[in-house]
Image (cartoon, rainbow, N blue to C red):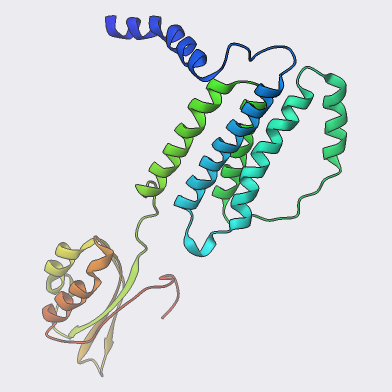
Length: 245
């Protein structure tokens, strides 16, 4: 508790020190000077370049578009300029709104994640344009780091899809007993879908929906099932398991 109170007490001082380190004392006047304008544009460009670099790191190669990445960088910088123009000027804000209202963008994004990067670049531009430099410097790299964590750690990935297993056994064999060891060693879940006589009643064909513990262990699983059934035919296939055979 004492440590928490001490950190909270130092937070304003830390923010002031960071503000003093990043932003010259001459910045913050009602009307930005040339030096502050250049600083804002370059800072916005750097932050949006970081956003673009993060997008390149998390995007699949076949979906990557250099045009889209360049758009992220330019868009954030343009937003910074726009916010600096309308800041504190209601007439300019209404005029800018009217001008931009006639623009129509017809590009469709390939993934929902692409929209998030557009908003991140715009957020960086908004923060810098509003002269919230510390906010921009702290939040944009943090969000980029979290995006890399989500992608690199493959967080919230979909569970492995079920597969369709078809196996033949002797007519006098119980599938649950014969396949129990192979299922226990390799499967996370299995469900019997059908059981029918084939080969004029000499064999049983059992159909299961199965989910492998390790998707890379499909070959070992098929081998284990084949050995358990006495080298009878085993078929393991992917696809829509709801399809009728």
